[in-house]
Image (cartoon, rainbow, N blue to C red; front, side, top):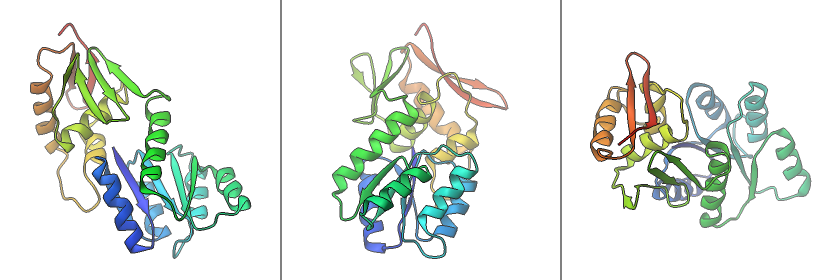
Amino acid sequence: MRILLVEDHLPLAESVAQALRGAGWSVDVLHDGVAAEHALTSEDYALAVLDVGLPRRDGFEVLARLRARGRTLPVLILTARGEVRDRVHGLNLGADDYLAKPFELSELEARVKALLRRSLLGGDQQQRCGDLLYDLGTRRFSVGERPLSLTSRELAVLEALIARPGRVMSKDQLAAQVFGLDEDASPDAIEIYVHRLRKKLEGAAVRIVTFRGLGYLLEASDG
């Protein structure tokens, strides 16, 4: 899953990005509101972590414009403004959560997991397809009692597929969840990861189905 982090304090941005990447997420880091709005318009994210005090366009305005476009993307607001009126304002604009600075990185990670659990898994900690089980808390997959050993790219592809049961995802959509803004990667690389995943899922009661010209779908099977 891919996260957008927008924070103009560079040392803090780097610390937060490292923590989120260490938890296994792909993270794009931007430092101003105009760039953030462009990315939110053109890219596909699972969640945005948005600072309020941004240059060129503040985080509240970025959030308001996002919601005005009808986007339901989960947004976690980061801010040094801890007053109740600011928290209420952010939540009324459509923020899903609010974390005042300074904060512990472990709390940020826990809040990110909670938002993703609500938005992608309908509030559940786990998602199942056939005998494939995904646990959002640990970000691990298992088949029956057997844990799956996955690279970060394979994990991102399988997360995207299991979070959208019954939905065909194109290579472009999957690539948007796997590769960051600073990575030059072709959507055709998704074919490689799907091939590897199919090998690792051999014998399981789940399969990745190809819809030629459309994309891929994860579905339960007879094994």
